[in-house]
Image 1: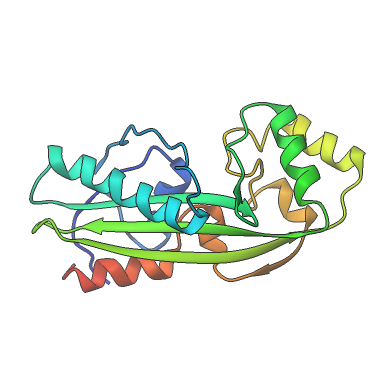
Image 2 (image 1 turned 90 degrees about the horizontal axis):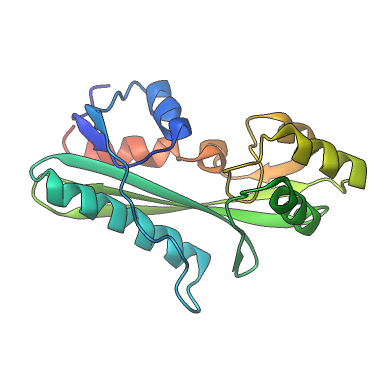
Length: 190
């Protein structure tokens, strides 16, 4: 299925790998540097949509007339957006919070078309971790896999052994819903 040439507005290697699964190789990858701090009282769903569009528009300003694809992912327990883990202690804190409970992974996707119009999608997946022991949490934190990941885990890695249930898009949990992305690209005349 042919898609239009795009610029990926993301620094995420996972998004690049996911796009390759559906045959999309961006013409360029340009990270949009933004303050990703949630706004006061901003819901996780609003947060990912706002950031995805802001990233796409920022890159579009420097590259008008191109298809610009951007995405953002947030892991949330209720209304609380969990951070990207920067340390093993952050990973531990996230896993302790999510142990034996469900959380949501929100994905915002935005495609800015050459005419400057933004097309967005919101994806929501549900994940439930098993009841984790302190040793399991410590071992996962020590692996380093959760560093730099929203919510402190990577479902496509060792964390898969700790996940009891998912509902919704697996690729969204990894970092980019492929079905919604393919639909956006096809709809843009790609």
